[in-house]
Image (cartoon, rainbow over all chains, first blue to last red; front, top):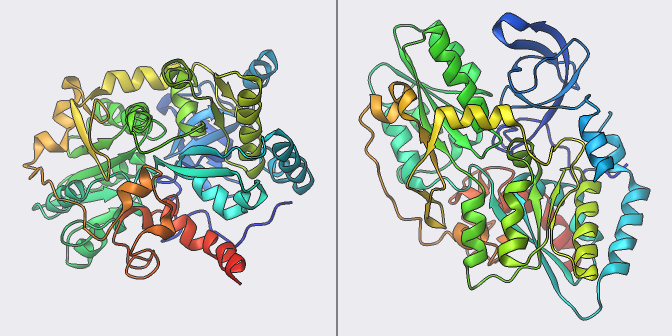
Length: 87
Length: 371
């Protein structure tokens, strides 16, 4: 593994993951389809309410990329891998 | 961690570094711009620059959302935050960006009700919890973040939250890139394209770079191997005499982008005629405001916003850093008067800012070189 030069927490007073255009990989835990929201878990197990309108439909267990409380891409779909292979 | 560990493998990194070495022509100097601040952060954090040959230079681009916000816009936000009954909400890094008379953090310390949020949804939640207060969300960011604001505005409309509004300072990535390419003082050989912006807009909007300016661009992910791989792909294009848009981050970025995100942005936003960028000046059609259909949720319509225009501090050279003309350490106040604890310029605020990223990580490598 390539090591960090110094430890950096995901979000602290000197690093805002939203301002940094970071994408946070999360796993869908529970879907509230009526409200277009999902309860998602980040890699550390933290729970977040996430807007899912851009990647619907989502199901429990799906992997999504979250930015500013919104899922901007599905990580579990084969779409991108097949597109990559096609290119 | 899936999609992460595979992209930090040291052996693969060494292999890519070797491939890069084999692809460069001795005696030729290569200058590539990483557009996104997230790339700048990764490059310094993982020491990607240490793995490159001396004749491959990475130049930092304008893609740090916080760094490009002009001081006047911060002053406008502070003025709004001092309005009677207002709760002003914004992302974390924005709190520390200096205006002409202090930051939002200092305004908060002086008594204004300013709250940090992680998403526009958090701001909407605060509005619902405080129906007797006006809640303003200071929206910043490129196309990565704009859909989130747009969806929240649609939700505010659907749920009938009358006390929520947005001060929109979203910007778009293509106009500043075009401005940089037109700039006579910057010679570039290629671009590492912004991966998460492209998740929304796709790779297609960058086709003007090879078509109009004859430069290759590779949209890249943010792990160290992503960046090394992208540099390899740019070098291969140059070596083959090709010049096109390639998508290294295809595991996340569809070439055509996220159509739903583009539709919701088109519904909620419209382009401003011009928008002021820190250090870059006014750039036509580079900023977003709320469309007529959402004007009632526009904080700049709902409140009297001063519309302040403030010149950048003379000592600060953020403009040159954002344009890639100088390196962070070449700024007169870098690391002395301007530090992440007491930033003068925006590039020292966000850890994606070139100055802060270099201050936090890169300077150690430089100190080793000096020793």
